[in-house]
Length: 320
Image (cartoon, helix red, strand yellow):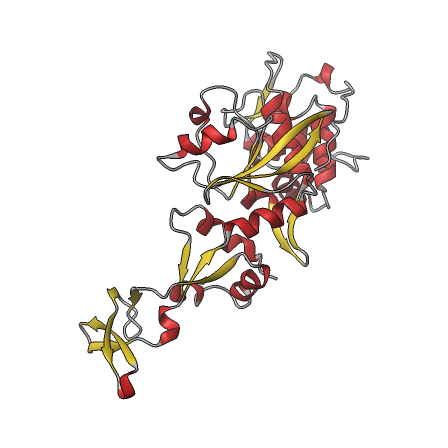
């Protein structure tokens, strides 16, 4: 089954979140209908410019003329046929219904409070949740990478210790002029499911910990991708070894950036089923996401000192 939401994220990230008929026609079967059923796409005004239906090689302004019985007919200029007829279906467009999506995401996350628009069609307070015994606002924002993002930032920073969701593109840390809140790209943590939206709670927890607990730990060791693969081969071949050591699980997470992708990578490399829970537990045993990602901007993998591997960490409490 296609993940219909994967086709929604680029639209939500666009300043003009409208999709034309010829784009929809190129989507896999069922995707467009699914987004309509969920209410995330709605019919918009017909297009004034369309892809030429005759040669499919250029986009032109639609020209209207009187047809039989006074019914208007539409055309575009085409170098191959002079004038190409434009069927009504070719002019159709659909717009992203961002408020409806915000409400659906709030329901999926089981937040408390009312979903409220903070900035017109740009930011919504979805509700609030509890994280480590503190109440935090959860926010959905569009366009934090656009030129006017500062206006949206201004309403977000007034929220209570906000946790921020964006469709796909994350803003630069410079946008915040101070403490950077947890930023989660929905393209990485959310998928389509029977009920509408499925969000991975482990990825949310990892992002919040990373943003809230970045610390310095001089006892880290960098592991490159080649070293990681070598460690995996050694572990798989080692006699009596039935599970991966934490160093490998943590290193895979640092290399790939998400619990899900790390688990998928290790499953491919080892030929064993490696779950997201295994990776998440290894992160906790290694001091938490903040410790293993303390060298956040480095392309290398970072793991904590062996002496820290046995350290117990308190599991964070969250209602997400």
